[in-house]
Image 1: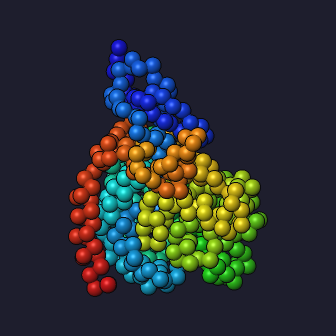
Image 2: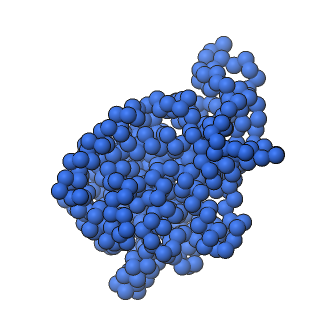
Image 3: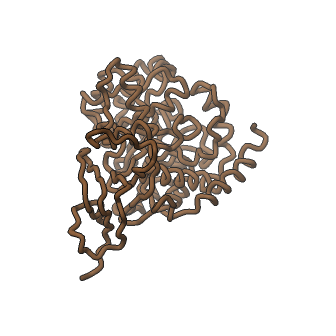
Length: 419
């Protein structure tokens, strides 16, 4: 019998995409599928799963990965526009490809340790981040930033779009790393730049990624300038393409939510960043869900996130803030929250059932996802495209200690003269 590339977990608990529980011996196949095991398959790994919980891996739909360089308390206490203009942009002016490599490498290590196999990123030098994620065995939709200001990697938006055109032209559909066009926002991109980005997305069948309606100031300024609110404005200039990623979407009207649905956009709920920067509002899950908008969860960058890149922590906040904001304790129960946080995953994360945070299991033994979402747990294994990127609590595809040490050393020079 030819050797199977599958992995067997014996006596394991597996939750599928719909949140249904399966107990017994299971096979995880290289193509992302799973099946029951008869016990006689010639597999690449045969693992005792009695202390393990198998789920789909987490998917982080809005990140700035190399912002690991920005200490998590950096500029703490600033509102968004001061945070950007007085802290982030001046510091990022000194970015170079090596800084981005080091920051992205530390981000990849954190993703693997916390059970995320995919990030929709928006940061400078996208080819560098793409290579880091690829070397770590992860998946990514890596967006190169496009704006008319604050671009340390390019002299102008046209140059940034030219680089993305080359990356998009050369990628293959089967690559785990795909590229996107990350127009920063309506306040950093002119109408001409937004239109050019949209035209490139249509030309290359690529996705757009943009911050949308994150603060009251953003929507107020847009309305004063154009007579329209941000989503209305983007619709009016024919910006949207199917799959456009709209990060935050916090301050939007119902007609704007319908516009997002009509354009098959993806709205990304980033609760910890919205709360840390005191944006005064987070995305309304019920309104977006009712309109049929594709909703995902994202942590944002580590400098603005209250969760780092830990998607379990972000999922917990996503559920709690919706209940709080809408006075409805029935919103986003654990199974629905986890499904939203892992939606679209074809990979597997394997969690430690003997982690104290996973106890008690409950009289019915069905508290696994509730414990995972509301308490968290240690990620023991992660399988991406049939490869073990983490196994028995050890990351296999990069050296964690080296990643942290390089980050610490880089930060000393990155902040020189700033802090």
